[in-house]
Length: 255
Image (cartoon, rainbow, N blue to C red; front, side, top):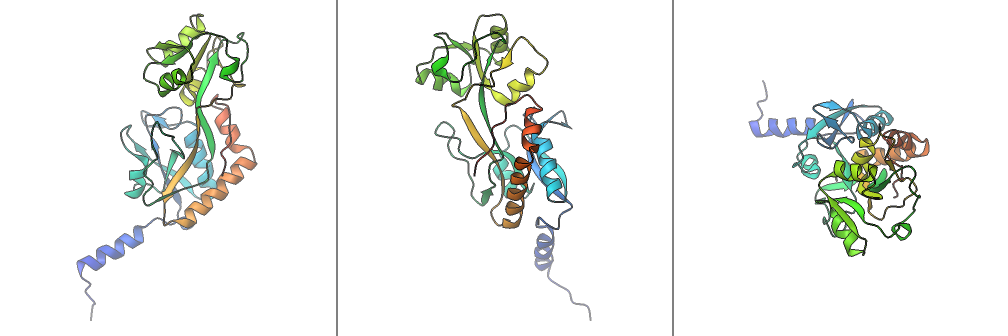
């Protein structure tokens, strides 16, 4: 006699079979933004240090890497909760009061795997500066819509508000601004083929954040494995190599 299960039981069993598990997977699916070069992809062509880091992490887990590309308005956290991916890349650990904390309901964060934020840019011959205290009494070029337009003014730093990142870079290049203060990852990528404006690698930015991966809170095995993989890639220099390969100064994450 054949046992006929009700449809609702068959659906429940199918859902259990499809639940993500870490060790048994042949691939880890990462959520990443398709609009945030050089961290992920542009026009469907994967590239960037986030993609390379994801592949290195998956390799440490003995798996391949797949990607779910999210639009600019889609939340990483919601995509993980909905089961669209096993882990989300590039989740800010502590955005601060300007952005508010991320909604981590049902999620857990790995250890941070790097830090980045706003960087100072200058002409190669400009005096190196390690902090804003060493910046000469001059206006710093900023994008009109950036959060640092506000925060620098709050700190008493004169700013030269320009239309966008490219306008700031050109103002530094032609001497209208001695320094620019811009979002690091995209700016470093924009400067890769220029020699008239450089990232001030010596500058210790006060506006930087730790980035981690978000995973389902119940998948403790995946989180543990990713934590171990991050530690290994940090120890052997892989994270630094991948990030600096895109022109971005490397600042390691901390637990």
